[in-house]
Image 1 (cartoon, rainbow, N blue to C red):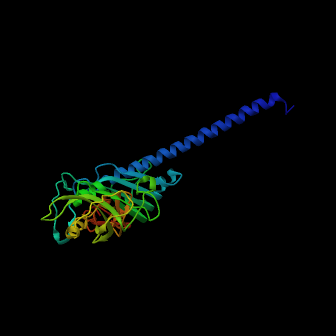
Image 2: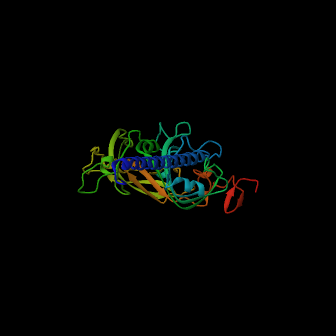
Length: 328
């Protein structure tokens, strides 16, 4: 009989075998697709490593950036050379130069951001609707000279309190984002990285002017803005709120000069593909500038960290809507 146990057992084995084969095939396909995505991410990261610093010779990146390519399946994106979204995080990018103070009254900076000992910044970029032109393959989806066409892009550059302190000449500087009034929290990760453009809390030790000439640790509030494409800090007063702070009282005669030590324009921060910062804010204990990359500059991985205005110095040819090196 058809429904007898003897006939059902082989049928079950066949069904289980088919199910196992299907599962193995699906898992294998997912594994292959994941490997293709990882290879594409690594390929783009290596292409970005060809970016050069201001002198046009030394590498702009010390470490290979983190690249995340969104979308599934990856093999279709790589084969077509079209990606819905690519995220880039370049860590420890060099920043040099001191802050500029009012009336050019530069304080002593024993640990400033110099070429031999630069400060560090993290540059994050998100590219949307990326199309790859020119020669690319499944094994090498990106190369340093590959042509890119980007639909839209955003970028941000973050510096920590150590870097800010070195730029200001305040070695023990800390940055804190006070919680909104009526809410507990100190701007740390447990509070979801609070953000502000006004009333950011800075604490550090500075020297009072003559004839007082003594070191005082003070907490001040600053407003953040962009001036000439650079991050500007404007001290607005001494902090007296509920967050942890120094409660040192500065004599009224020296208050204005002490606040001036926290008012400055920081050196130009690195941004991706010629972006000029348009906004600034705190992010927990860091400071951040944000802007929009120039999509004309974003036509090559080689131009990743080239500053605005110098991106095309090595590109003299254009064909198919893409800039490239000679021969034309």
